[in-house]
Length: 144
Ligand code: DQA
Image (cartoon, rainbow, N blue to C red; front, side, top):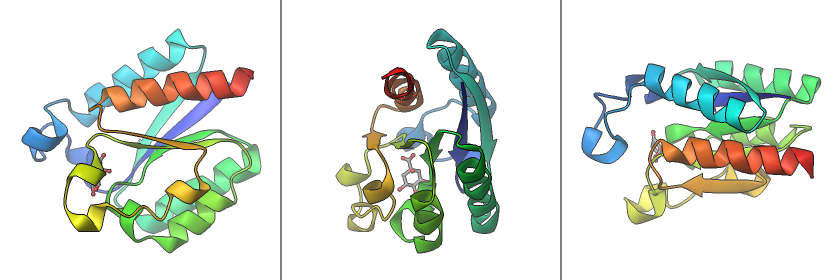
């Protein structure tokens, strides 16, 4: 079973972006972690990253059409993109929202997610491990 992992804006800068918050793992390292963790739980993983809202919406439409499960870190779009929420609401297989940091322990504007209500669940605050936990949760969901 294939799972698409979608990473939103500025996540391509992982490794050098605010390392005190996001750690020093690069996006390329994260891709490796996701592919390895996915294989361990029987999932074929593809990771895509975009800074562009329209691109993310197109990927969500593709996933809706192909019934592909999605793990998404919408990054800053989490907090205000109704367009990404509406696209996520059309998905036909499970969606898990992930965050590297715990947005609830940060600035007030990060406390709201417009995505969570259309996700099966949310995993946040475990660093890059949030993705490994999300892949395990997705695998459990899909074999249920
Ligand atoms: C983030 C949290 C968001 O608030 C922020 O805008 C990001 C990353 C995280 O993974 O912790 O870009 O989604």
